[in-house]
Amino acid sequence: MSAVATSATASAKSGDDRGRGGSLSWMALPALVFFAGFAVIPLIGVLVLSFTSWDGLGDINFAGFDAWRAVLSDPGLPHALWVTFLVMAASWAVQTPASILLGVFLAGQQRYRAVLSVLYFIPLLLSSAAIAITYKALLDPNFGLGAGLKLPLLTQDWLGEPVLAFGVVIFVVSWQFIPFHSLIYQGGVRQIPRSMFEAAELDGAGRVRTFFSITLPQLKYTIITSSTLMVAGSLTFFDLIFVLTAGGPGDATRVLALDMYKRGFQANLMGPASAIAVILVLVGLALALFLRRLGGRDAGHSQLDGM
Image (cartoon, rainbow, N blue to C red; front, side, top):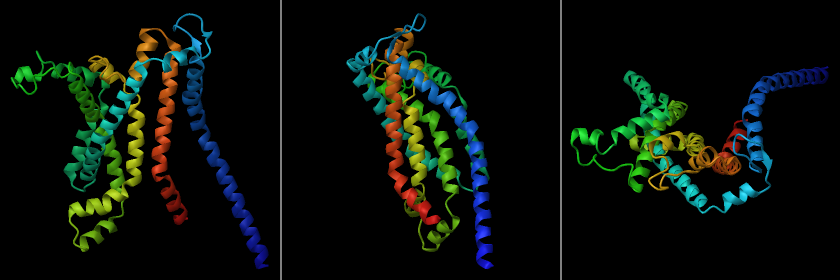
């Protein structure tokens, strides 16, 4: 009788699991429909457009690989791709350490840190175009902040010199998006068991040693998640750079997203612009998968161990 009862209990449990799994599948259906409608279908449309000749208004004509040949043979493409990777690497190098330090600081229990969390988050709420216009006015060598305060260090042609313009872009991008990643790291720090910090304190570890021995290793997967968002976001920087420098001086800040806009909406070449959009998607996907593999295997083992 016990064997029969056990079998019946197992069957009932299996049925409950199947029912629960079916209900969860139905709950995920709206998200899948949303993702297909706003991600998959537009992406397929862009891929199809990359094989056509269209000026944005007239008839769409199939052109084979003409758009791809025009884009891949353009000598400006490697430069735009190189600038895109430079912006990606530089913004990651600036944002990641600052976001980690701010996130760890804001994860404290003091009340004033909650107020600072709100203040630090304000830049993310502002429009990128408005931020670019503001910084462009502040950095004007004739009428900007440096000229008003009569500070020679600030009275420079910030947006007229290639190196300075690139540095300004990285600074403004980091200033806007560090709050978002600080919030991610703040949540990651608060997920670390308090017992680990208490054990380190009993062992006599100071704040610096605790940070490098406990906090930073425990934030490994948070760093991967944040880095993935930074990489994907850096590929789509357009509005801020367009308003701030318009890709100049020369082509010093002409990233691939800006190149796509100029081809599509200024030169009315939707085929080549769509080809660049596909390249951006492929590059972003490849980088995201690479970052995922950095911690995916360990994450999988830890999940299996937990089971």
